[in-house]
Amino acid sequence: MKRLLILGSGTAGTIIVNKLHRRLPEDWEIHVVEPSREHLYQPGLLFLPFGRIDPRNLHRETEAFLPKGVTRWTGTVQRVVPDGDKVELEDGTVIEYDQLVIATGTTPRPDQTPGMTGPGWRETIHDFYTYEGALALWEALRNFEGGRLVVHVSEMPIKCPVAPLEFAFLADDHFRELGIRDDVDVVYVTPLSGAFTKPVASRRLGDMLSRRRIELETDFYVERIEDGALWSYDEREVPFDLLVTVPVNMGAKFVGESGLGDELDFVKVDQGTFLAEGYENIFAIGDAAALPTSKAGSVAHFAADVFVENFLEHIAGLPMTRRFDGHANCFVEAGGGKALLIDFNYDTEPLPGKYPLASIGPLSLLKETRANHLGKLAFEKIYWNVLLPGRPMPVASEMSMAGKIPADQIGDEL
Amino acid sequence: MSDVLVAGTQITLDDEGFLTDPSEWSPDVASELAANIGLELSDEHWAAINFARTDFEENGETPTLRRMAQAGGVSTKEMFRLFPKKPAKKMAYVAGLPKPVGCV
Image 1 (cartoon, rainbow over the protein chains, first blue to last red):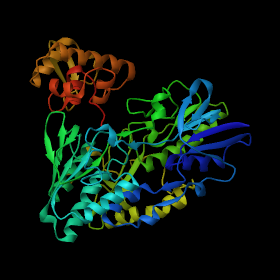
Image 2 (image 1 turned 180 degrees about the horizontal axis):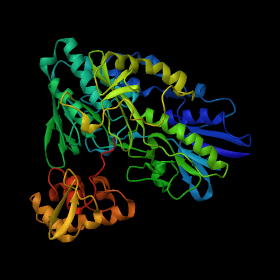
Image 3 (image 1 turned 30 degrees about the vertical axis):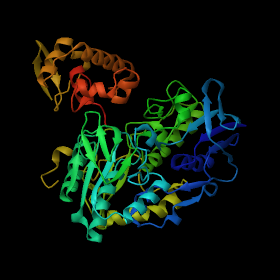
Image 4 (image 1 turned 90 degrees about the vertical axis):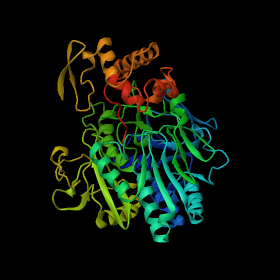
């Protein structure tokens, strides 16, 4: 038997296990290494601090999403030995492979910023990208009566790059509902030069911040957290009563230690095929890969479609004929029961228009609508029942310009 | 996109003023671009610029601040001192490299 070894069964790993399980030739077996017995619905973490989702519904058993016949190893990877075609786990187990897929994602690393995990951690300093963090923030927001709420991004790239903006919008909505909006200053602090990376979306999202009286502090690179304030490398100070930060995001430690990573331990891969630089039998997919697109579940899903077809060709000794275009789409929760949708790839920035069908939609791009909000809520069921099991989604994996308004034809309304 | 004469050479700049072709760059061009944004280039600037250009040639990407610190030996604090306010962008501009991609 030949062995495909997949490291990680988060969103990307689970999707490709399920897709490949049905399609691999009979002389191939699949092994999966995953430390966690529970799979977390990460998009739900945004709503948890506002009490808008039941925390009991966020986890399901990892095992339930792995098909029969797949060998499951519970453990943490120590290192990959690329020249020996084997992986060592922390407990000393050695697993050999013919083909390896790294899908170990990205992890928030509050330890990377001096002062972040100091005395105020989980009291006045919070994150919401972990279950424990989101729960602690729920508690903190319940006790928050007013003052300066600072929403902060430490360094790009981060997982789900729109989430901190969504958090700011929802916080505005939340304080309005409580009738204390006038008692709160909401500040959005980012290392970027605007609200978002690409010009059209940045303008639109920047407008949304200012309409909500959310102050925007740009080009801010945090050096340390000290005395209840963020301090930048150029000695700017942003004081807070409550800080909601997105810590530096890094890939799994073993990636760097195995010589496969960049400065942040993301795997250096070919942008079109995900083949790790310098190897013919190591791939990285999802957030674990160093790609110039969003670290997001939608990217993992679109990438998986391309990867699966390529992989089958690759193990048959054929050239891989497909190339990933960097397609991503994300709902952006705006508060007030509305959301935006953005759709983009490596080359095309998020643009206004309709999705998935030109002029019909039903979803509108870069525009706050009720339909987009309902789409975001409906996604939870789609995630568990369609996406993770690797069933076909009714949207194309390749980005399309149909329905989009090109950047140079956008009028003043934006 | 526009063609301009900088330090006696014809070069092409994109809408934000970045060089579109790193091979059109020269140290004289760098000094003039630096003057445009109020910088006078010191040896420390040159060390950063030279590392960034070599790194770009090898990897095809403008180095991030993190890479400048880890691989180039220029700490982020230094980068802010050398290229105030927007170090990654200003360094790329002076070094004739593409604007760093803020990963989305």
